[in-house]
Length: 183
Picture 1 (cartoon, rainbow, N blue to C red):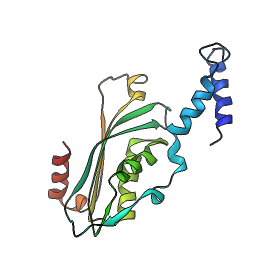
Picture 2: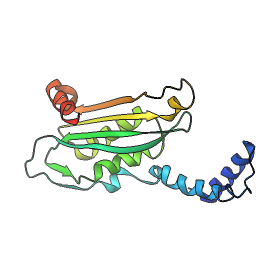
Picture 3: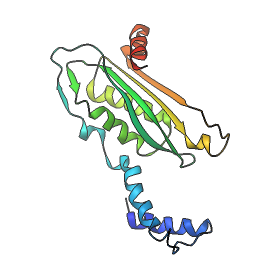
Picture 4: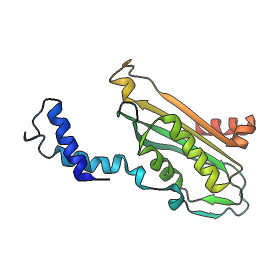
């Protein structure tokens, strides 16, 4: 990520919207924008395969759920933020994952230009691929500023997406248990 280039582009954007980038309140804004982009879009610099730590599951074969995970992303269509909470669950198949890795995988995918549907499936597919669990369930619920401050301007709209793999997809009973436990 070229922070100097991002800083220059931010300066040009300030000029294009009719502001003076030399004005006191704006003189350090391009540098702050570049620094914030480093964090906001830091998911491009990470690979989930490199952060996933697994452990012997010690024959544990029940559902594991990490709930109420805050996430932030940027809409790829309007470059507006969207944010919300995620619930990620899986049933292990001999291996369990370090609990902090579930939010970290979510962060890797959400800290990119995205849409909510893709984040949901990327998290589910990554866990399915790297853990080979019996099943995976992922639910995201988010508020989208592109819906609130432009377009239809609906202030109380939430979007919910889900992705199920393995037994979560094949067995309604397992999917129902997951959905009941996350609410």
